[in-house]
Image (cartoon, rainbow, N blue to C red; front, side, top):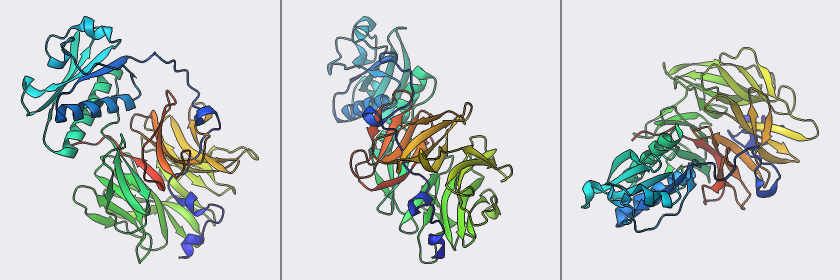
Amino acid sequence: MKALLLLPALAWAALLRAQDTLPRVEGGVRVGITYTPGSRPGLAVTGGRGALLDSVRAILERDLDYSDRFEMVAAPRSDSDTGAAEGGAADYAALAALGADYVVAVVPAGGGGAGGAEVLMHDVRAGVVRFRRSVSGRGGRDVRGAVHRAADEMVRVAAGMPGVAATAILFVSGGRLVRVDADGEGATEVRAAGRPALSPAWSPGGRWIAYTAFVRSGQPIVLQDLVTGRREVVPTTEYGLNITPEFAPDGRKLAFAHGTDAGTDIYVYDLGRRCCVERLTAGRFSDNLSPTWSPDGSQIAFVSTRAGTPQLYVMASDGTGPEILARFDFGATGPTNGPAWSPDGQAVAFHRDVDGTPQVFVLDLGSRALRQITGTGRNEDPTWAPDGRHLAFVSTRGGPRQVWIVDLETGRLRQLTSTGGARLPAWSPRLSP
């Protein structure tokens, strides 16, 4: 267990894939935005008569609200005066009177019966239906998934990019891996190879995950198929401390940190060939960990103690050309940990100590401008949504550690979990049926 003692400069928690940080401002979030309330299109969700339709309406309303792309408009429960609930010749003048640019109607599939629901997205200004999809009434989680995917398509129709309702977040609670939908519902345990399990990461397709498993023989990196439950151990990780796995964007490699008496270094495992582990850094009694790939796979950002205090570095994906990426301000901020590269490649999020308390920051790679995102409580472990505008992170702002989500465009915050003791969230890619 000597590996557990390798990093006196980094607390054990700092070895974990993500950490927390926030800015001290009213409301606890500073995002440097120019957003003006009322600038987003208005959207109302109508319809819903019966258990299935009411459920579909509730899920859609929550998903579209949580996309942060719309100003949600309250709609009457009875829609007979607008025609939207029937899905036929809608009275767009009546819909416009609601103050909405879009109205989503939930109606019985086929105009009646109990076979399912149909959702329609009305473009009120153009007077047309922009989106239509049927949802089967069978299967609890399948229904939720189908509605999530419909909501994401509606976001795409209105905003040009799909939403993130059909995604999930993995996090650690009490040493267990827990999966929860992006709306905070459907939390289930993922049975891991060992306990505790740490540092979960998603494959690009969302079918496989990687994590550190604490078993009798050590702390190996485990690959697990979420569909079949099949598990594989990454070779050469059966001994020592192995943490912070991260899949390459093309899914063909896995980067992770491996600790020995000589320090902690970053290695890459060839997933395509299921063999061959290559060392990328030369620690020389320093620690290099928390690798995160650029979206094009050409670079890896990581944390290193080679200069003393943990700082953020970047190198080519073959380990060449390492250079510092974001310096800390001596006397003002402390160690940097838990980096995560944004899906568009334009930014890296991480947490950094401010007056001894971790807070979340975002570094713009073009300008090298640094934004402090949080400031109330301890905030750490940032992870990006596929849309590149939402971050999930762990915060103590409400008491025990919970996963929170912030929209970087509007500054809106919402609490995702209520389990307490949550750590190390990892946001999935968009998930297929």
